Image (spheres, rainbow, N blue to C red):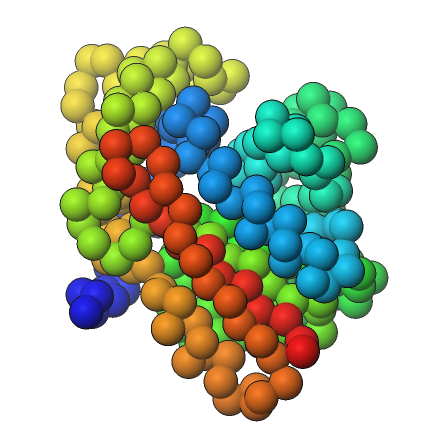
Length: 262
């Protein structure tokens, strides 16, 4: 039986936390996902969900800095699959970051530069696109997560959710073999606030402690597939749900969940 879900805080969610701190967490996590090929196990289930819905385009919800979607494009190609075309969206868009990712993946990645509310996605953006929510849904409280899923199913083509953890704190440990090098290398790889990130990462343990807290809290905020099924249940029997797990380095284990009309 999974542990009860806790709606704790992550430093990366707090508006008063300096941008250099938030960027350190996001950038380090992006490199962790890429260097460890942690999302490679999502290629086949996402491809199957696209085939079931008849979509070849994806509306990525809560894209943040855009790395998970970009990494998925790269993993599709690395494994010999033609990737769908991803459109990055967020309530707080980051077009300067997205421009770089899109330029590196022409034809595979685009972005919407204006804010997009995932509980009420405009029809012209949602039409013909499967929605993906990658490593994001756990940040939302239940009422908001439910509203995002309902909009995806009632107004969109379906939804594909993935989280890199299950709801067990020790699961976070499996990311550290790539996560720690990604954190230590980040001041050399970042494009902004390098001196501040050196202070956070090399001079003090601040970045490591914040990353440890946010990672452990993330595991306790995860929604299980059963939680997601319960959120969708009030919509009635017209939707089919599927779920599974994917594995990565050192016994790491995440899950995916999809829902669409029958």
